[in-house]
Length: 374
Image (cartoon, rainbow, N blue to C red):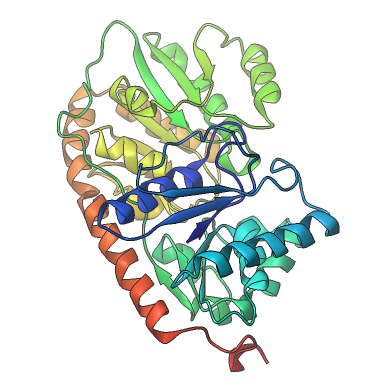
């Protein structure tokens, strides 16, 4: 059984998309897979699950808001009841908002719980309540997953010692993108409009290079709380005709196919699926060398450029200018980009999930308070 807070609360993010892929792939291999969320019954999932996946919508509380004590108690009872009814070999909670609830709910049932962490530890440094829930969850979890090697190294030792790295699945698209493009070329960025994604840095960098590249536009695809701020910034910089803030879409592949260059200005990531997917479509990419996840996927000079140095806006602008000026470099890097993500093929990643699930299920649940946490 897999659990995540929501699959239908507005446009889905990377974690929801990966859960849908993994659950569908496991079900296609003959495993009995169910997905529990707290969405209201009758809602439609943003990302489609395979027909063999059993879908359970608990309908408790508002999934778009933090839950209070009464909602949390109701969710604990519901998760416990569902798990007792299904009697799964193992339960996987995606993100701390889920694995904290699941771990506590299944205490004493004998059902092992895997916490699937989907972000980097820097996420928690400015979110004290989230950090507290991460630590509270640890004694109730049999094991954890994280989606990047450097991401794992960023967690405290007591947590990372019980973590397995399983990257996100990415499918290569053999046709690749047209590095020359048409009359208008597209610099693409995909991701939630949140502070850690640092879209403002990208917009300001694009403003610096746009006069040299009047045939380029910047297209940012995503949803989030910073939309109005970014729209105001675009207008302030006089970029209204050159920057598009598009809404999230289930057909994001079309965005990659239409792009000539991809940029990910994030301060931190887990496994940046949007970046991996851009590379899989044969699009060269630019990002920051100090960003976990990004620096595992981009290889400077091979499939893109990693930017270093204290001047993030200026450094990013210089890297963008270099590749926007050279279709030959973009073509060469784009050709290498598809092969650079071969190790993340869906079949291979599903193999890794199968191995972990079998291992944890065969070992059974550890004591609720393991020696490492006494």
